[in-house]
Image (cartoon, rainbow, N blue to C red; front, side, top):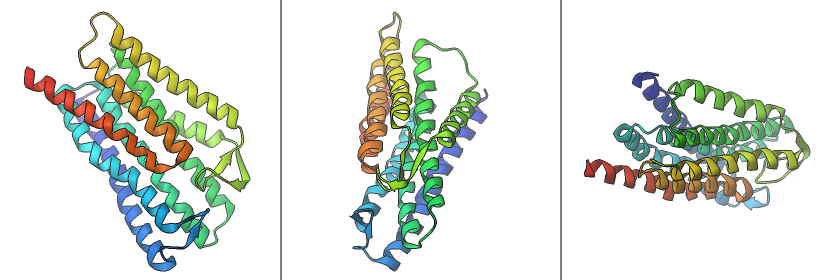
Length: 257
């Protein structure tokens, strides 16, 4: 895979982040100006929802540039996939669209569609982290575009077949998952596989010195994913320590060379 294709994928990821940020700003402005700060949405105020959903695109935009800089300096595949993961994490900001759906009286189909789109972002992010974990074992496959395409396809596929309870809008305005046990099992399987792969890869003979900081970063990213699914989009801020750790260690290694 050529450097131009890798850079193209990173530019695409930044485009997703920028589109999220612009769309978020536009929709939040319209909602707040038309409905008011204190309007109720799913048991909370519109102001609180806006502040919560502000975190994912903000974390993505703030973290994208240092991670991209770290990738340029180290060309580490793990950092490449970490950077793309940030773009998927920003999908939590789409929860703000449920306020638009609610206030404009749109059909339940729109909430179902929104639920599947958000879960497509979530599953894609986990598969990207799984791809990153493979390189902890000196995985020699360098066609990153194929891995990215596979992650996106797998994420969309799981989101499409995900059963939903259309009669109950829970878990931060989205429809609840019909097969909660199955979804939990798939998510836990991916999370545990990613964590174990990074840990075992860092302990193998000849593992680079950057391996352990990347483990910690991956664990922060996994935490940001899991907690945001359970408690709300504000938890994507848990990715910030992982971003700082990767960029700090890359800068340190570069200075020592």
